[in-house]
Image (cartoon, rainbow, N blue to C red):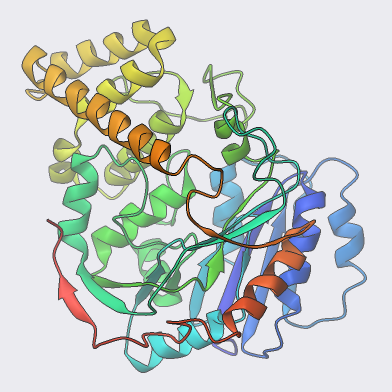
Length: 405
């Protein structure tokens, strides 16, 4: 592939034109010929996105309408393969990026950084977003936390060990392709090694684990050059309403995975915790990393599932028995009790911190209230251009290498 573009932003989507059109508009409005936008659309509805894309006369846009249902992972795989940029950034169809992403990529290129991961400091909630506790209080809001612009280099092996100890419950300790910048050559290396980039049921988790295995280091930057969005129809929206779980065969997220292989050691139901765990487990298996697979903290996973999903206790204890039968020594009664205590304690601390800041913003700045992510990107970039402290890439002292504690 050529490297005509410095950055490719990749957007897989399915039957969500109301989110995807403002998302893609927000990207194409960024005035840079170094930016490419790739959209891979598996919509089977009226597909307003396809109609809108046909009216766009912008050579930076690659739009593909795949007219049959694919799993989320396969949709992401096909989408990422279309990227031409030196750096690739994967986002959801209700997300966006700042125009500062070009500046971030220039910094990464000039410092020979293979993976540049931003801390999540900006977030947009679509007007249809609701939560069990705050109702519509977040609707339409752009939140921005304080940031310093500094960079810290991390050892990926150490960070992956920490993530495995936490049962891979989130990607914050890891390099990110989803809302991060990754050199395309690393993705090519993954394909050469195993024929694919993504495994399992969560592409963002899978990519983070894969990159932590093949990479040497990544740089964490305290700067919001991307902005995740939360749509009411998204998985984050389902999670906020406590509806992000179900049966593996009937859940709409899981049904397209027609050849799904689910290890007996993982509780057989759909939830945030089990999907993240499955993606990490499948990635370690796909990359033949048996040593790290043995490090995966199954006891922490079972404790989390018991605390948040007691209605699936049968599936949880069945998975624990399977792990014991396969020789796991980490899921004994004492270890399980210790992990459950850790989960309960962390939950209590989180709730206590929320009581200290009981409003929906939780101490964050509300930049604006807008109707979609197209307007949200404009508002964020206007705020970043307004002389904020740290509004320059790596404005603070020289980057240092840190190891996870």
